[in-house]
Image 1: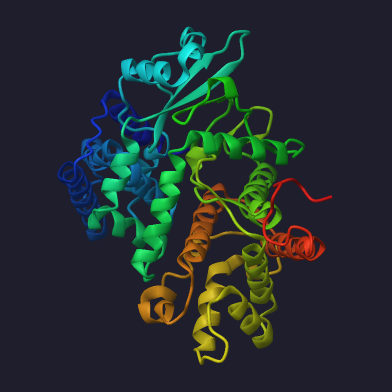
Image 2 (image 1 turned 135 degrees about the horizontal axis):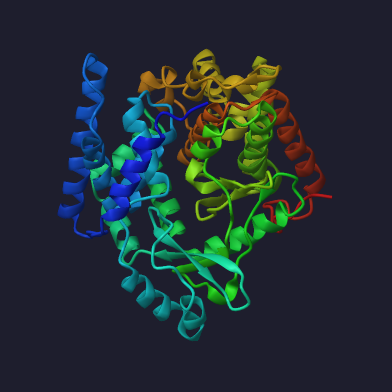
Length: 461
């Protein structure tokens, strides 16, 4: 099947790669970029909804996307979210935004070299000797260059933008960027709580030492998996602002789809992605909250490489148990099971009256196609099933839903959007059910041992 949007994405990517990053840390400068992007995006969307007009010129699309790429940090995250969540954006605009998953205006190579020398000291020279000056990706927190270690190992070197932590702190003082992110993640929710979680998560992403720790854990956890692969970390060439990992060969999601893969491969990749993002939470208490398509590659040998592990949250055992209980209750769909799950998760308070039917409708909308015991694909509309439920803020605000859990459940729909785009088919009901049941069984076995968290993060026996 031909990818009609590929030429457009390539033109937008070329325009972004040709630009140089000018990372503004001032509130005024960042607000100007955000306002420009918001205005141009809104105009393009409105023109498309009006119908009858020609498709927007590439120059107009670049002018809407480039300011988000210049912002880095929160602004670029917003663009990435809009590119793969089912928001009913015009196809050309969504295709242009998808370029932000891997490309944006980059910082000059001279600054990359200076930062690596500052961070790595004597280990910088052997890394820089065979490093390519042209970046291969420029993301929201840092950019990636290809290099070769002594001995010939090909590596990807991720280098953090200077002052990115300060720019993120500035962004969260901006109502334009902050509330925009909160609205995308959880429309109708209490903004301050969601913003606090997003701020914490983005600042955690700025610590590449933390990311290296999680990448090594995921590499151990999935080292024998038939489809998933996590590139090894090279610790001697890592610091808080530099991360060096083995180079992964492969193509992105759009290139894979252009090659029209078999249904068998679509299903295999889809179930592997579900197992990584959802299974990682249920099995190990680890949750990668950024499932956008720029974070994985489809390799020539049929494996799927997961590249980015900075957006990871670790959950205590009781939280995983409560989420697994809620999932099983949504599938059981009885008053007793749901009421018990609502109480266990803290959605409602014991002895306090609440609207059971509205709460049931809200929770079941989170799971959507996972509640049907049959092999099926995920339709685009099923990746946004709860938008109508959240049209009334009162339904959500009447509950005591912790913002962190809203955040977790909302990001699931990023995964649902990817699975829909991939065209994967599976019995998602049975996969979800098995993972939730395993989590509850493991929790029961572990009771009385550590009792609080997944301390080792290793597979259960």
